[in-house]
Image (cartoon, rainbow, N blue to C red; front, side, top):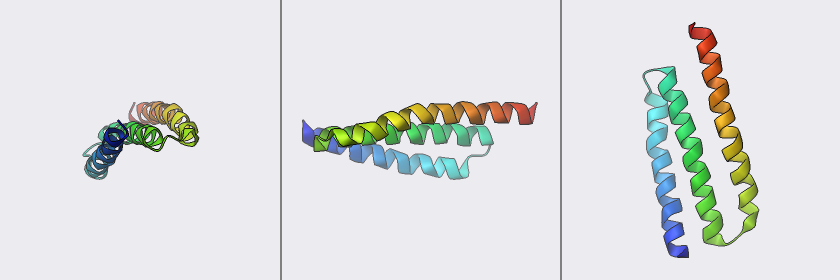
Length: 86
């Protein structure tokens, strides 16, 4: 099972690489905000799988922190764009 979690963590990092390209090339700011939210969600999943792969609970605190604040950042960016565009 741990080998599988290692592969999942590596695949999540590969997905992050693809989404970072979208983040850099997004035609609109809204696309970039969605890509940034996706990167943070994938990073959370990769770190969680890596914590399970290495069997260390030390990595779970950053997982909780990242998952909590990534959605808060998306909400803040969305509110900012809503006020700027309207």
